[in-house]
Length: 74
Length: 326
Image 1: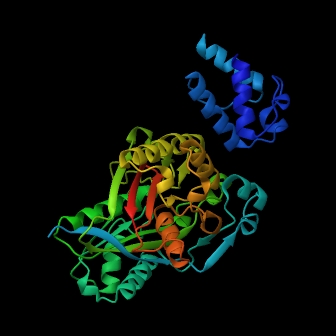
Image 2: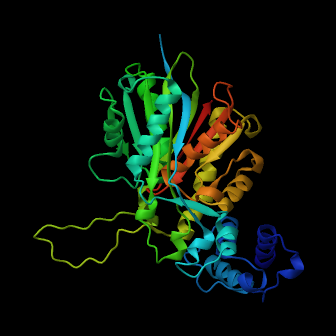
Image 3: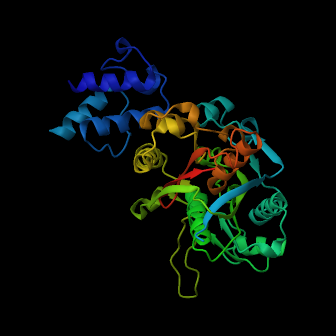
């Protein structure tokens, strides 16, 4: 469920197809996102899951984002 | 009879020197594509011989000319700036002296990129108080002098310039609504001009520089959350639907931010005027430069009752909107 929501956010923000956004996908390298795109994705995730992501460091793949939210909500 | 402040005319003054993104590649490693895709900026003006006070003086001279009045008729001069020539005298006093408007009181206000909106709010209150009839409000900056020219993440963003408006008195209100905000708890997200203690008693080595410093993500968050919320709230307070507002003139920090704010507020992107491609982020000068350009090209027509929202946001943090009938 967390993955699907994050996938939808990335699809919306970057104008990609859902198939392009897998758990292993590296957001900046594989989806051609720049730092502002990443800020926006993080911003939407914060609003969606009501979590605070202090730093974008270490958040490279979709899995990194999913794990971060899982931990924050645990 | 009750009187209200009204924008009567606009003017601007820019440094001669144009610095393109390609020119920046000679200073540090960057590219036109990198800068443009992230900011929408292609070039900016950089002061070489000009100063904040000289640019603002030229704006004031043009405003006097627009109005066909003598300098002694001016009641007040307010300059919004975060890059004055001196801490004292104020830029506004320098302008007052330069144009010989010796009956005007004059002062600067410090509200970074929101400065022009804050100053305009104040100016309108001075006129609507009934005590004053004619005022000059200018946003002017030479940010190039506070930039760290080794820091490519911030040096590419900013530019120099000045613009302003002449405010006069009218019998009907044209400032419909305002919504000014600040949050000093996020002060460190954008700082410039830090000054350390310098007395004989001060021995601590403090390396903190006075260069402009910005926490990109914090400012991005601020812009798309708080500024978008401010615009939405101001609209709600006004009882106007976004479609009834002719144009939104936001501080010109970054094209991408404007796209996001438009999306977030569900306001048609076409209603947001932009020109940061030519000037970069000129802080307090950006909104009046945008206003003047669009008055000059006929998009905005003073006296035609167009509804326009001016929204500033920047260091402080400060932000706010004013809804006017132009």
